[in-house]
Amino acid sequence: MTWPLLTLGVLSVAAATTAAGYCSVNTLPTNSSWMQFTKEPVPVEYGFEDKFKSIHCCVKGYRSIEWFKDGVSYPWSAGVSNLILYPEAANQTLYTQRAAHGDSGNYTCRMSNETHSETHTVRLDILEKPTSTPRTMFISKDQWVEEGADLRLYCEALVGRSYLADARSDLRWMRVWPNGTEGDLLPTQTEIKTTREDVEDIIGSYVRIERVSAQDYGMYACVVHSNDHVDRKYVTVHYKFNGLPSLTSWSNDSSIPWRPLVLGIIAGALLLVSLIMLHRRYTLRLLLAARQARARTATAAHRARVLEKEFDVLVCWTAVDGELVRGALLPTLGLKYKYRVHTLQLQTQPDNWYNEVMSQMARCRSVLTVLSPAQYSPQQLLTALRQLRALPHPPVVVLLQDLPKLKREAKEGGERLSDVVSHTRVVPWRHVHERAFWTQLRLELPLPPHQRHNAPHHIKTESTENKNSCSGSLTALV
Ligand SMILES: *[C@@H]1O[C@H](CO)[C@@H](O)[C@H](O)[C@H]1NC(C)=O
Ligand SMILES: *[C@@H]1O[C@H](CO)[C@@H](O)[C@H](O)[C@H]1NC(C)=O
Ligand SMILES: *[C@@H]1O[C@H](CO)[C@@H](O)[C@H](O)[C@H]1NC(C)=O
Ligand SMILES: *[C@@H]1O[C@H](CO)[C@@H](O)[C@H](O)[C@H]1NC(C)=O
Ligand SMILES: *[C@@H]1O[C@H](CO)[C@@H](O)[C@H](O)[C@H]1NC(C)=O
Image (cartoon, rainbow, N blue to C red; front, side, top):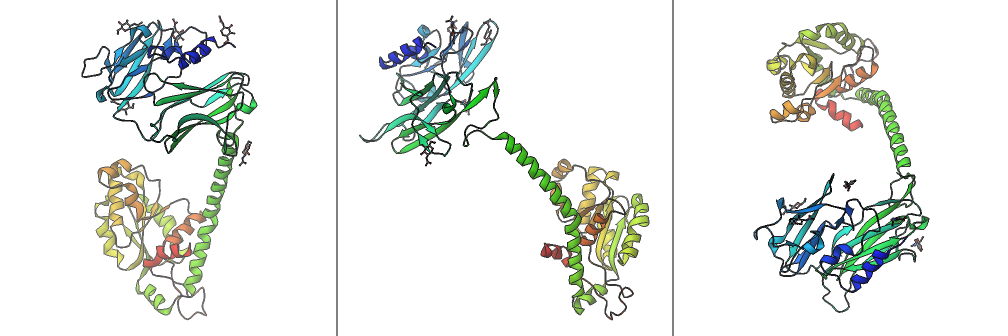
């Protein structure tokens, strides 16, 4: 491959380029003629007040270039910008002899050929005085390169003036080894430093590799020293095979090892799912068993408090769920699990539920409400949940269907749904023979008093914590 233009460019850098010459030096090595950038387009530019400044859109193969500053098209009135076109550079360059703070802004060039148009925006910042910290203006994006192809990386930065004679202001490329240490470039990796004619505090550097080989893949750092400050930016050169980005990781630090990552995520998800299923099946049963064991050691005072109330559970429901409650829930609670059950049929409209439940609550240790979200509008459902939440001891709610998304309605009411259900113990209904449902429900309810006929030699009736500590005992056991 030949580099006549580039060699010429390097020579003319040494000979000090003009503002107009910027676009003709260090150009990308290509001889195709369609519309394209001739060098890396730098999106950020710095200048200083009252100093010369130029900005560029280095393109070739275009028919026209138009410029805009913050959306206003060239030519500009003095209030918009002092920058003017440099026609000798074929409209690719704007400049001003004396930059002002007001020239700062976003400059966009739009270049067009017969069929396409493309834009590039340069953010120009006119500063009052030299900076103390370096500001990196450009670094090449990560590259995917085939072996044997050529490669060029570029980095440019505004560095601070050196205050001290021995202070360094410097920009250079380093290799980042897989072990994380930085090293010098290889002899085959050529570095070409650049300066600007307009602002001497802007310095840059190219890395050029003519034929990329295995040792060239990996991470590179653009290291900018300015007085005591160091700025590092990184770029990774990836291996490209047959035009597709490779899944192979060439550098431990840089490229993401997708395959093991994806497999790891899948394995993790499977493990989590099985843990959740095990948890569903066994953890709740263990918790329930532990509670029953603790209940056997309860004090006499404790037991007396349990028997103060006539009933263990007040089961509330509306007409629509009557069949399920009378046919499945009440018999199982009362006959199988020996709860002392009191019942209350609520009105279908939830607006007065609080008062209805309160009228019976004093006689019962806990409240269980059966709710069919499907028969209510979102607004009614929120009302229902709020009424239940207002009870002194929030009830266990057996949901016969999933709760719909109530986020919007709840927000309108000034509350989030999570707040509305946060103090309610929700148990989704599954099936009358589904043991997990009953385990979960019994964990949420206080334990019924121990039955005499089950253990005739027991003089005293065994019992459990009172309803106040129901959820507390759960957390204590976890
Ligand atoms: C254009 O460049 C390619 C290599 O990039 C070279 O092989 C080819 O001969 C060049 N064509 C002309 C017309 O210079
Ligand atoms: C205009 O430029 C685009 C891309 O820059 C190119 O693909 C297209 O062929 C060009 N059209 C003409 C007529 O040159
Ligand atoms: C250069 O800019 C001037 C002024 O905006 C415009 O009249 C002219 O057509 C432009 N030339 C090209 C090649 O874009
Ligand atoms: C220039 O563009 C950037 C990002 O696109 C924006 O944050 C900034 O406000 C713009 N500046 C002006 C002067 O419009
Ligand atoms: C890191 O790796 C490079 C090249 O593989 C080697 O030259 C250097 O000694 C290593 N440094 C450390 C601290 O291991």
